[in-house]
Image (cartoon, rainbow, N blue to C red; front, side, top):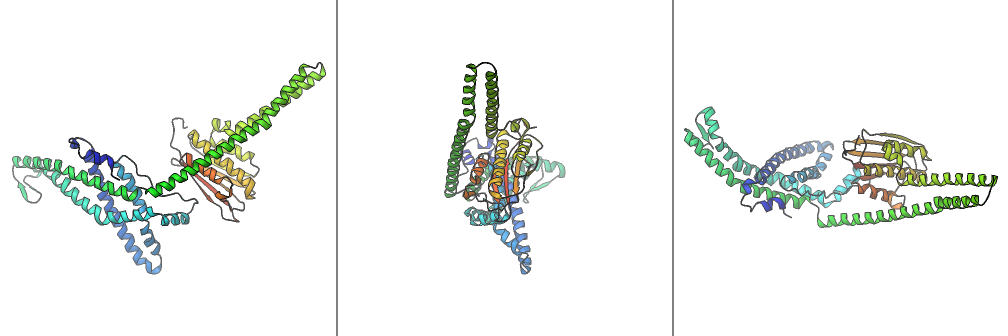
Length: 425
């Protein structure tokens, strides 16, 4: 599990002409800074928690130390891209339900949480002190020699590294030359140290094969459910066309055929009947198209489309969707579909008297919430379509969370990343 890019660069004869030594230096220096901050934070939290533990207030602080590896690991996965462009996947799963308790229980059960804690301890105890020494002797010492001519020009005689007193320009430029050679030679072990740290970080912070296997299995199940859902949708459209518009068109054809064989007032009556059948067929086709992809969503965007859904909902629904710009088409469609299915579930299963739909942009994250005052107890395993909704949301890298205590209410929350597009307004 090597940090492949920097490892491949190490044997190159032109290593010093590439960006890898300097990227490695940046990785080591930021690691030293991070290690210092983490150490001070860890000690402050431990000290505060130990003092306040006597009055029980500090116990949550001490428990939080066990989860301290999670934010540090998240930062380390991003920092690792300094020396390895290949991103490290987040090993943590998303909770199926919202709330701090669900998140905490899931994180405690995950092996990745404890690997990240072990990495935090390793970073604080070993890695950053070693890297501090490496940066001081591999970068700080030679740079002080390289700057000797500048320092001597400003202050006169200069003592380099506390043992070499430079009293002439010749000695100053000799110190510069020695420092340049020292730095060039030091860049190799510094790059090697950064590569080793990257490999170690990836070993601790990347998902294990078992965790990846679980994700692949879930993706496979999700895709299977999506295929089944699309097939069911295709059969519904086919049935609606056959039982609705097609029958209307057949009746229209027969009526027009009869009109050709008649004369006078009877012809006018048959043409009038055909006209009514044509309008009914057109209305059914329009409703069918609206169910596939509503024109109002394309023309006026998500807020207007959600308001239209609320107007047609059998349960009174209050809508508050404020978006400063148009969203990507795929995001709008998924959000619309979620609201549509959620309101349908409210009408069918919740026993609610009212519902509410809210939507907003939190940075580049679309947040939609659908709530009702029904009986609660919604469960993705009971066939209410929640698993299918979660699958559709996952297609656009979003997540769906539900809170539905029995006998109270239901809150469905959807979060979908949606960076601005060229067509955003």
